[in-house]
Amino acid sequence: MPGLMIPCRDPTTPMPTDTTTGSDSPWWRDSRAGPLVVAGIALVASGLIHLAVWGILGGSWEGPVSWRKPILFGISAGLTGLSLGWVFAAVPRRRGDDPLAMATAWAIVVEVALIDLQCWRGVASHFNRATPFDSVLYDAMGVLILLVTATAAWLTLRFFRGGLAQPADMQLATQAGLVFLLASSALGVVVSVYGDLRVAAGLPPESFGAAGVPKFPHGAVIHALQWLPALAWLARRAGLEVATRTRLVGLATLGTGCFGTYALLQTLLGRARFDTTPATAVLLAIGVGALALPMAVIAQAILKANPRAG
Image 1 (cartoon, rainbow, N blue to C red):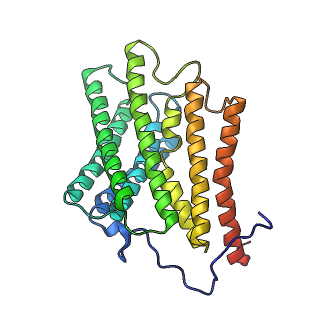
Image 2 (spheres, one colour; image 1 turned 120 degrees about the horizontal axis):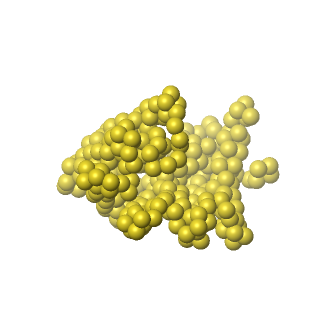
Image 3 (cartoon, rainbow, N blue to C red; image 1 turned 90 degrees about the horizontal axis):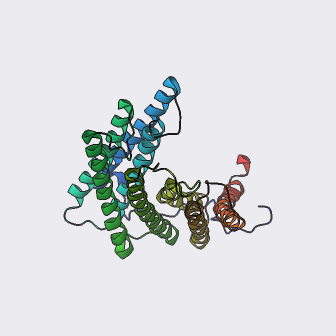
């Protein structure tokens, strides 16, 4: 973005000492974060292994029985587990935190393991009540994900009440990411209930109206807890001042909210993901622009601080 003035840190001065945990010890060494870190790494690895399996064995990407589910659920749940561990390390310790973190880690792992099991059995993992066994597994997945959601809600409340001292940009990024995660989880519950009702009525669970995709708004912003803090971290590494970083995170938060709202409206209107109306097209454009601009500003700051990189 030529001509845009960006307040940057003098490259001869040391990096700020602010941290995300308020501690000199790395966050992953927190006893609460540990189980979630292990679970997160294992699940991401599982997703990547299933990606390799899909590459070797082939098969459809879409559909109720496909390798897409163990791939995406493994990577997505793994990233969520890592982020929840990070948030655990950022809030004041309370009695019972260690067993809660351990239970949450196991809930994430077992839920994805059940999805993987159904895939390897060659049957649908979701909305599958073809046999009593399938129904029990599906209900177990629901209970496990509700446990993870309850933990995320409890951490969100605690973080808003008193997460450890952080720069304003990282504080905003974490708070917004947690809110988006909870909204996505709530939509996931709605999608599950709606799908069950559709199946009971003999209708396909994957559609709403003519062409709406219920899972689209559920997944649209579920990973804001990763990308918003990552953007704040990149802005700090680029040497931007706290005030500038906070404005950039605020803009990205607006963009994330616009994209999530766009996904919800598209579904409620019964339209495919990118079969836009004029109004939703404008909303999508605003969301994309509000997400792209902070990245452009950060990239310019990096190039300015390191001219040889250009």
